[in-house]
Image 1 (cartoon, rainbow, N blue to C red):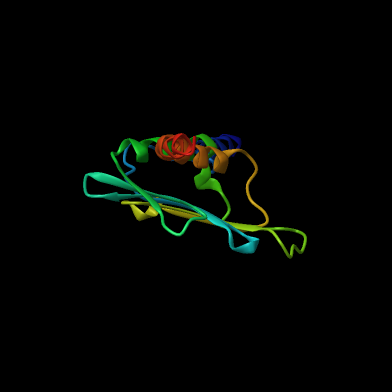
Image 2: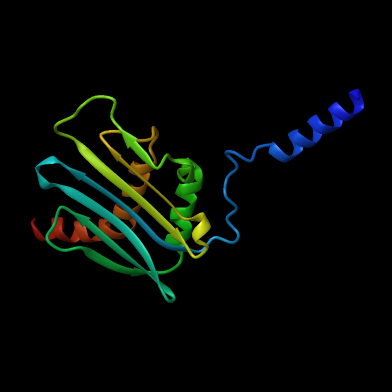
Length: 160
């Protein structure tokens, strides 16, 4: 009887070991779309999006402007974003975050990530609350530094 219990416990430990927070395997992931947006009071908002289009990735960035800044890029954008997703385990984010306090003025955000294998796709959103960590700042910095930095430099130089 003791041998049977030990065997059952060993099997249970083997099958449950690390499956809850195990990082998703990168090898068979093919990102179709990554979208992060944030909206605040007084009608401000920002959008950071990368969508695969045949052999390219179309990047759209909007920082409270009438029109999106649109860039054509290669697949490294998807790889770079996947590194950020894996680094912060964004696929483990809760579906919804809400503040414990009633907030009349604040911000909301939305994250949507789609893969060819829809079982890997996930989304998360929040109102005046969200996961801790620097993930969203890293996402914003990635888009701005990779795509908009040269545009901003051109604009600043033209004002001098």
